[in-house]
Length: 326
Image (cartoon, rainbow, N blue to C red; front, side):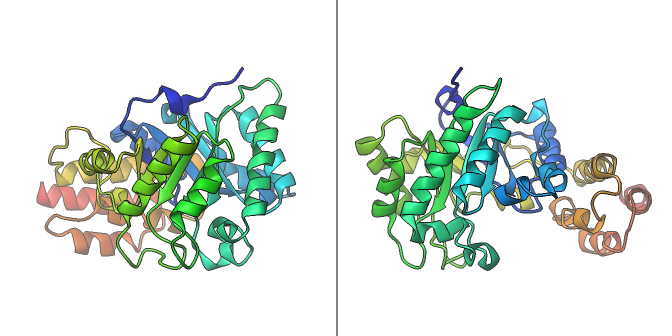
């Protein structure tokens, strides 16, 4: 049975961007219970790793809950055979969709020819898309989930029209366009005028393909404005979530420092309960700045938290701060 959830979403919709070592199961679960987007993406997961002896460790990236639906597994790599097997696995795990990463600009990914590196090898990109679709069709006892692509305006130069038209001809369910090239990384403002060109190409080539814009969007309010101005069906928010865990709130309100700290404690406890000794506690520390900011004493509190090595230490420091200030 085929089900394309992208076609069932009210527009404009919002999406939480896939971010390495950020959008893991725990963080998504916190956002799902706080101010959820319309669609979640996992961290990007290497298809070669999913086929390796270390598969169990890699597959931790694909842990999800029912609260996180609809959820899309994002995968990356360069071998079409691995994409076939990876897509088959993702479908059998019960994901709502599978997305191919053709946009990661990081050097260690690009030098393998993966991520944004695939913009330079369109023939391989097409083979990967086809293999991914075949993998979905081969999944046993699972719905035939939609295949999508997330990419950029180009590699070292902008080739939006050429690249978008090529991808739209591959019969994909959704296309997310980040408004920068690989070479630009995040050093320049996202170019939404170029993203608008993708919408125009879609209208002419593949009217059923959903277009999602990505780049420099802070919150739901801005996402709606971008969608109306540039014609995209949905908007993906990435770094905006770092400054506001309520970024997807449709009717934004002012959240108190206590609410931020309560959320921090909830996140830390869930992190420890979920991963136990599987993940180094240091990974949790990168999230402290999400919650501890914008109020008096925040920088001092954050500095103290960075020295913590356990949930108990975090709870003690936060409790003392709250007793003193609230």
